[in-house]
Length: 84
Image 1 (cartoon, one colour):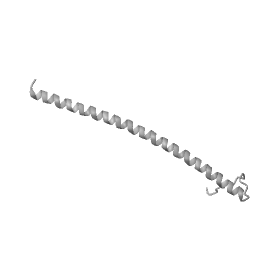
Image 2 (cartoon, helix red, strand yellow):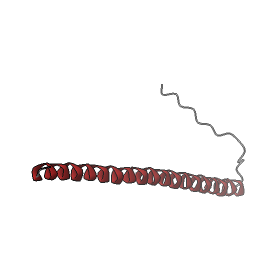
Image 3 (cartoon, helix red, strand yellow):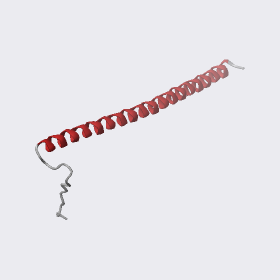
């Protein structure tokens, strides 16, 4: 085998190794991005639950204040829109 063939084989092997390494790095980055996405989704769900609980507390406080002022808090106060 000539030195030229050895050099060409080494270049091909080097390119193949670089491609394989790049593939593995990208695969790892993909897995990390998916894990980050799942974590962000979980944080969003927790934040939504916190907001819902905060809303319920605010509604309860408002109802208590309204009842304390003599308002009937069980009466439906629906607003109908007729702008269609």
